[in-house]
Length: 108
Image (cartoon, rainbow, N blue to C red; front, side, top):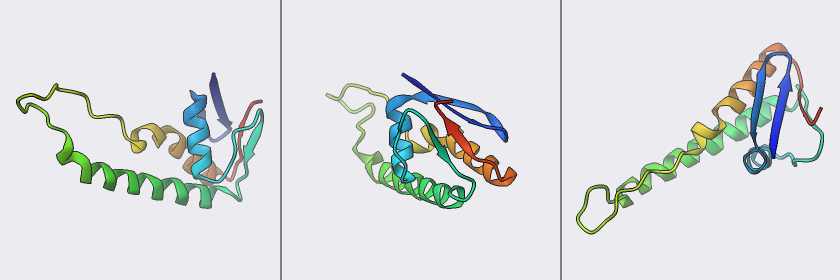
């Protein structure tokens, strides 16, 4: 199922339910049928999501040596997409909403 986040400050952001649930969990919210991230909650939400991205990037950098690209006996594989790439549109929306002092809604 697709979840659409809306705010007057930015274009709508659509994502799959499991990603929406994960990102909202990072910022301390639950994915319910309808919800809101108020403008008062935005600074903390942005801070939490940015911190999670930093941790993810650090962990991915530490594991880069574990991908055996091109080594004999190892099948080539794609490196999975990181949190920074998945969270960017949502994080951008949070920042724009904070700048415009607006809320973010979903399920409306």
